Image 1 (spheres, rainbow, N blue to C red):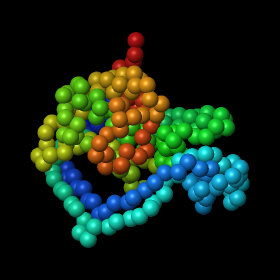
Image 2: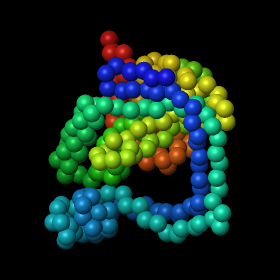
Image 3: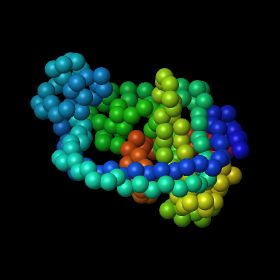
Image 4: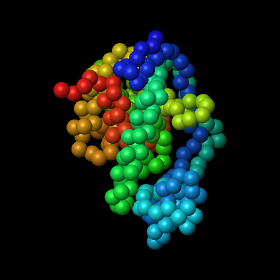
Length: 246
């Protein structure tokens, strides 16, 4: 079953296989240090203390949060779970992608013009595709609204983002029920998305955080590790789907 929400986003309700594989875990730490934020540079996110410019690409360095792996543990046998459940595929068209990319570009420019260290929440704009961030954030914001609109338990639904095969940074989101055979959560997203977007937008805008927090964006059990999330990017899609504010 397929339908369009406004002109930028398409939903497709289907039944599919969900598989989770956990092969181990990493122990990590964060440091706040001068670094290069040029993703094409070998010094990207490498500590460059007291260096105003990157010695390789010569771009200005900025203070940023750098994540370092302290140790890595692998299980002898990966832990696997697999089940069949309803799911809703979320795709956006080329016009939406172009708008999202331009929005992210303007936000990056605004942040760099201040000459101040990039706040940790905004560093996502340099680390991940803007389309990935927007779809992922949108999915989390819809799940937050789902608890209020359809009284869905947070444990009954999840959301993940998959990069499409082929050239370009095209990403697809999937809402899916977390129990074998389904529980109605994904179908509720399919039926009530405009209302969910309206409520999700209100939650995000009423929250006094800057870039997203556990109240409006972060979700326990996120398959993507709660990375590539930024409240403002999700609001771009929420505004496109929800009814115009009066």
